[in-house]
Length: 635
Ligand SMILES: Nc1ncnc2c1ncn2[C@@H]1O[C@H](COP(=O)(O)OP(=O)(O)OP(=O)(O)O)[C@@H](O)[C@H]1O
Image (cartoon, rainbow, N blue to C red; front, side, top):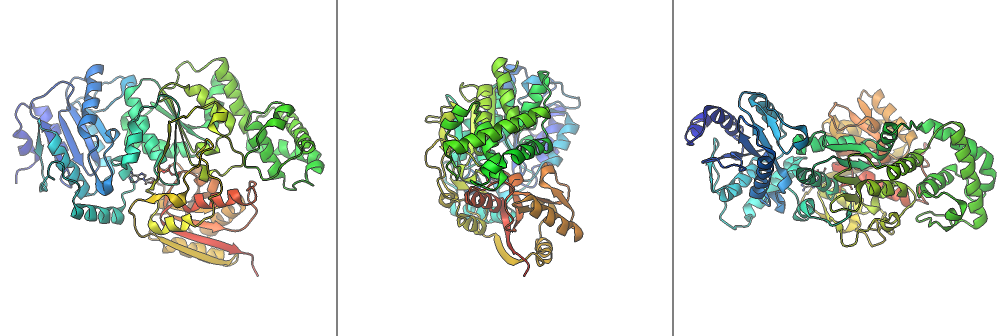
């Protein structure tokens, strides 16, 4: 059988550099897929398409960089040729899954940083690119894509170094046998990153849909909301110039998603800013010459002092100070309430106690005291920073406006945060995308998008197919009673996990354990050891900081290397991750061990309602294995 070099030599009209590059690309498809080489070049058309287990690439091999117009045409053509290819499990190839690469044979490529529509590499760079890529497609899936692409690429010659499987007939649906083998394949390997290449048709539609104003994607846990948001960012970045912003309330999450985005869209490195809202606000204020002191310890001390002075009035109503602290930060600060009169009128949605006017007066005195204590320390709290940034944006917007702003886990943002992001993005087409799930709201408080002045009318989307959790885990999580009034973030009825459809992903394990605190160390360490899973894919989740500290100590004592979730970036480091459920939001792991100790939560749980939601969030972080421990006091 001829090798890659001989096969490429058979294509007419290629120069030596092109032959070298194309032969290397072809070689790389030996484990699945194929290479399509254009017979006769055409401006704005890729010279080749490579399908491998790493996905699909459109390639131009040229010493001269395409000009901006040709570059854009190239991307458009690459997308058009590939969009909607069918993949395993009824999923489809979104246009954003095709990477575009310009290879300059021999020499270093030059390129403009502002117009990055494609990756630019020389031959060494290309070799690095192909060896580093993750194989997230099965060989069967790569062959299937190549087979379908063959029907579309009439002007291209298909080259293959492996055996070429028969191409499906024109218009043929995926045949039964292929579906079964693909599903089995997917279930066995469950290539974690196959979302890079294939999306459910309902996900794919949302990636490229044009919205005339702010839009919202909601849906239960694990339905691919973030996945869609990342694909959409690539889609928008390819069409608009200017920076893009991906933000969320959870401190560590943006870094993890930035890493996933670099895998999806390496050419866009730096175009999209991934940052949590507080970090964004602090940095924005700093750049405007306003330094703010934002430290949890200082804020805790200010509240502690204020509480000491005012507790006598509020303790009879509710003894836990956390409840009142949430009242200050979530209701008053979070909604940007500036006067007592406003506070009297504000909806206290989701709060378990109704307050009389005189009780609200007592709260307001606590609020005043707290403000004084903060001022005395020259400090801000977390909502102040957002309010200050919002004021500054109103006074003078950023010089380079964002082409698009995507907000993940939006359900946990305070109202003032929503207002700030709305102001940053504006109401223009495709500029603001809000992604979230009311059922996963883990902080007290609540708002409707309309209260932030964000009109969603007709631009609210719902995803319903859970892709993350295997059947056993999904069934377990569905039984958690977190289904009280779930809203779609705008007062409408939301979809609960119970009503989500399951992508066909059978199996998984759920092990429940019940025992005393004294028995926990042996059980936890035993459960971690029994997992035949890479430590990087394991997380231990608890509901309070005390329980997290205990789990960490137990594991470390047993010689299991751990990293707090606060420091997790998605980068493999050979350790098990440990943290509170609030830090685990938005993430997933192959195996999750959840430790319920029954200790009072760090934050008020609104009479158990938020507690159930936090349990649901914890359980749905597990993809394949869930260990669910209930710790009882020592007898
Ligand atoms: N089209 C897809 N193909 C394969 N896997 C997918 C697909 N969409 C999502 N997934 C898998 O499901 C996981 C969850 O996706 P994602 O984080 O986007 O869901 P989410 O709706 O944002 O979840 P949550 O609300 O629980 O944070 C992904 O890590 C990925 O492994």
